[in-house]
Length: 619
Image (cartoon, rainbow, N blue to C red; front, side, top):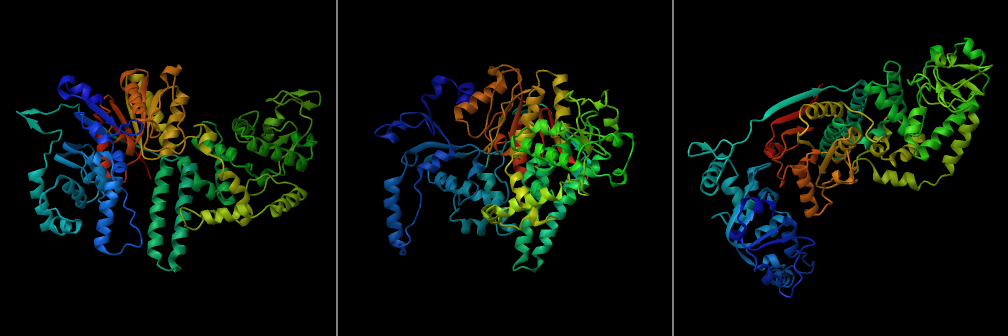
């Protein structure tokens, strides 16, 4: 509607009707009411709803009876759009009907019109067979059935040549380089395309390699089952998908990360903290948040210094087993009450803010490095906690197992084991039925014994993206933040589009914008979680755009991105943002991850951007 107002004279186009969900006619004769308008704008889904569903009764086997049944069903159930003979039907983004067996494709090809046009910037996504629905809709001579089309135009090279010759007769092709009277049809700014490479930190690399090892273990395990190739191929493709998700951000693949956090892997991550102790380190940030979000509490074990007996140890007068038990219970309570920031802070040394080395636990439930505890101020014979400013009545060296987990006294372990035995097994049965990635063997078995199943279930119930609030970093997210900040500092009026194919990464980029107080809006075809409200000012600046919004709300959000200077960033999924939206107002674009299909990715380039950036992770 907006494009008609912009490019057409109102008196010339006549009456215009937008026919869609929540805006349908409620009259005695809907087709007749629709025909009173000169132009009808509708959606592909509305066309699908207008076409009767073909649910063939199982008792009808005779061909003639089947034809008779369909005629009767069609007459009774056909919608208004299929009762009208239009003068001209124009399909925008016509590649939507590329699958000739889909309900939308069948319904669209059943529309009746005197003239038919199809418009698409990417008519073929996968193979030349996708021309069949377009030819069938247009009524190209000798199209026939799909089988006939395949034999004539797709079977071999000679058939493809026939298809090329036919396209020359029916296709009107225009590109950015096309000219009319020696001048370009449309003049667009040159695109400066750049490739930005970034590297994983140590923690990300360890987790990335762990995913590969786990999947190859599963793939090799399929070698002795019946029909192994299909299962191995499927598992291999799943591995590629998960690795691509992980490369954007670890939490986009949080389902598999939670399953892979075995004691061996946790120990390897905790060992990294012995070197990467600074809060500015990406590895420190990632591992600290993993420690915070998991129910168990792990600390770096340093066996070679656990027996240290200096001046500090001589004054410790706390029961280390009792204090360890209290601290672990305290951290568990914070986890259950979802006090994540408090739990994050309690996992660090209360004095230096680093991961505590040779950790001590105090009666006020704080951790200290042994050296930091020795440097605390004294009030008489008692030291003062630098965090809560209370007297430390008792302190003790924190007993740590080799896997980094805080040890509890044997009595506590016996009680905990008894509790687990008393719990019903329904949860475990449900978990087994759910399996891994739609029927694959559970990665949870990779390096983990059965006693860990209970805690894994509890961790899986928590959405780590919401918990971390965008505070957990990643290689790509840091680079995006750096580039966007540079663009905004250089030009406050810049309009930036960030494309990604993973919905969880949309949420993470939204949280980043919220943290930086950048006003942004978002576009996606479907969201499992509502995106955070991304704003940087008053309530008037708050805009969202995703698949759950109505068409009118989507247009209003796009208007805000186009017209309001404060809204600088549009976060979009490639599937939703690359089709049917005018983003010519944008002059910067970031493509976070490449799409599986290059044709869809090329659609993104039609956003008329000046600066276009691809992201890669260096090996």
